[in-house]
Image (tube, rainbow, N blue to C red; front, side):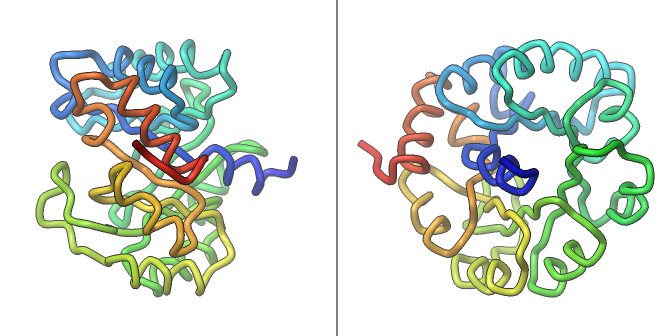
Amino acid sequence: MNTTERIQRALKVYVIPDSTAGAPRSLEEQARLAILGGATMIQLRDKKMTGRELYETAKRLLSLCRPRDIPLIVNDRLDVALASGADGVHLGAEDLPVHAAKRFVPEGFIVGATAHSVEEGIRAEAEGADYVGVGAAFPSGTKKGAAVLGVAGIREVCSAISLPTVAIGGITAQNAREVLDAGVDGVSVVASVVGQEDIQAAASLLAKAVIRGSYE
């Protein structure tokens, strides 16, 4: 399995634990339950944590992810991702440019980017991103006010680039098939998994919709 295929597989059920949506459970507990339910990739994202707190949390998450061969991606903070031994970093439009980050990362390290338009998707590919988060697919409860690209817009981005892609924004088990049919390799979620009372069951329902193409 080459790197692209490995990333495509990992993007299937990409879960982002959240200190607000998943409260009062810790990020580690949210990740543990999501993994038990079928999460294939985990992202550490917390704007309030210090660098040290992010590093320590990343190390704890790695102890959950690594034995199961599930990549851990750190949002925004390339320094934390590299220092902790995480599998990659996700860089937004206001973060370090992808091409700059690629100069410092080891072979096999994943650098993801976000695209809210065809132009941003093309730029991410040109700069060397390993995957692109495309969206928002639907209105999102965790990122209120985010521009909605919609399923048609996601299809346009996927048609314009050859990178692995993951849909972001307002995705649930009930609408996941719509974005998968638009061409993405997987879905990235927060509230529809970690915001649910039974995280493991919610992750399992989403995994079933994504991987087996149905939900109950």
